[in-house]
Image 1: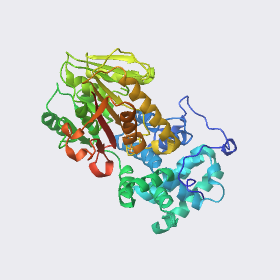
Image 2 (image 1 turned 90 degrees about the horizontal axis):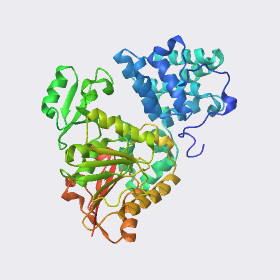
Image 3 (image 1 turned 30 degrees about the vertical axis):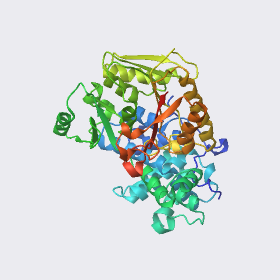
Image 4 (image 1 turned 135 degrees about the vertical axis):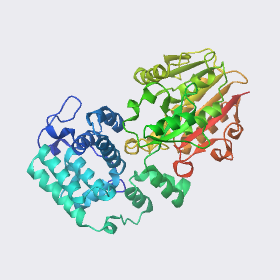
Length: 473
């Protein structure tokens, strides 16, 4: 087995499709069992394995099909957990499958790996139930032959001691990659950069679900009052220390978009690391700010709340469909001080802008705990390609600024090539800019000694974020 074979997502070959499965237009089977969490999870996973959709978009579109709150919770856990641990689960399945596991149809692999996930990680699910239901799902969709094969794999794993399910590769990067379900190339570069102990802690943090953190609208209830209001309805809520206006929620009776507080604009889901970026930008009342890559709108709306009705946030994105996400946020929050426009950062829509945020497209390796499928979508060559794009964006925006103007560059990646190296290249080629030390605006615990904002999931309990504040001289 090569270093990547056990942990990458693979496309299903045409020969693997033993018989057709009737689907709705969205790819989900209309059979009578589809209302159960496990059946629906298996179908959504099959689509995800085929690489046709983003997992979270697919999941959110179908959560409403499950009425019972416990079933919704199980559906979310099965889909997100199986995709998160895909590398490890696939490696285990391949060890116990007689034949070429990669030629197994996607929906069968999805059911098998969902069953393994339950056997290994969901201790409250009886092992016989995890196996029997997975086999039954395969039987309904693919017939008895494939059901027998799925049963043989799952029964064998059920009998195998846990210690025998540990990878024993002599290569550290491959061993950690398989066991903690990340691409080998990603683990190898982190080992070089961070060392074994820090990398292991990061891998573990990436496999823990991110907390549900929300930003409270400043014009609404005070955070402490909102905490009490939520608790009265059985929702656990607490203020996040060090981040004014942020709450951590749990035990929701329904999906967040269905909560009255969300619908009315009182709360907005957002990792607290975003507040650090906004603090670094330091928007003031009445200012005009350009958020260059604004979608889906979390930081843009936070800035709009800061600058008040006398200011204006120009929120742009190159993709109209993504800009519609910003529009939805703006309308939900009833923010009248935002102007949305489709724009390319390399083709400037303004003559001058004194304060600009470039929350740049990036590899996203700082948000893997939140974006469970992202680790399987990234390739190492994308990092250099993205770094070049990020530099071009900085150079383009620099052309519309004058002395004293502020440019904040931010990413949600851990990769130095996209962070410190991009800033260093920009400052080298554009000497009119200087770095403004981050600890003047952000608590020092989130700042590096060389003046940047840097957060990590395993060190700070936040998304992995990088930001630099640059001043035109």
